[in-house]
Image (cartoon, rainbow, N blue to C red; front, side, top):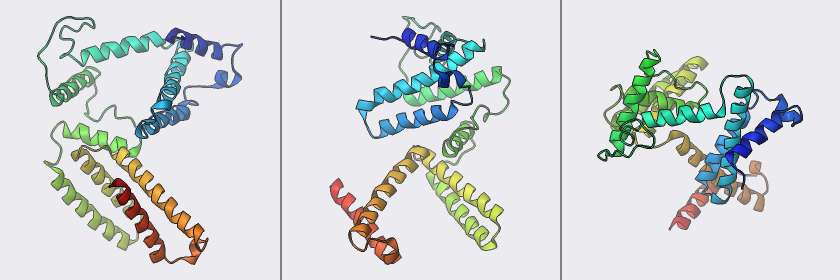
Length: 270
């Protein structure tokens, strides 16, 4: 059976003068789109509970990490072993309830704590680390490249950790209603920049509601995307089986097909 060492050897071989021309041409920047694609393929496999293909997708994602490590090694920046060393050290440091003396193979035991306490300690330790790196804002290190919904949730979480937050979901719902009213006013005003700004505020408030309800906004929207796709495909099927063209139907008739799709899903659930 192949091991991690074999994978590292394979990566080096692909990048060698006798290796693969495509792999030889790649840079840190050029493989970023492939990394994003592999991440989303892992997520998709998990959400579909496609356990048969999960191992394969995780392997593709691991290969991306190995690829970056090889590029860094060639540039004399760091090696794959440095990635592992830094990761393990960081996780040991951030889990003092598991490793009280800061040693990976410690036998010391600590009293058990609940997940909420773990999260609080985790955030406290990360704030200390940011201070050591002379970062002055709690919003530092929230990556700009994150999908906008995920980044909004992380920004809000960071702010909430220092008390800048609504007390409950009701406060966020009130804010959403306020943002809807402001968006209506901006639409009536007809200025694109104002509409864009208010639409963004509404989305940001909706992300905040998801956070208060313990929901991942990206996951919630992906679920709705899949639901929309299922129902619209049903509408398409009905159109093709009957008159064959969308233009032959009124919006009310198409909406009736949509409601049929909803009813079928409800019936299947019961």
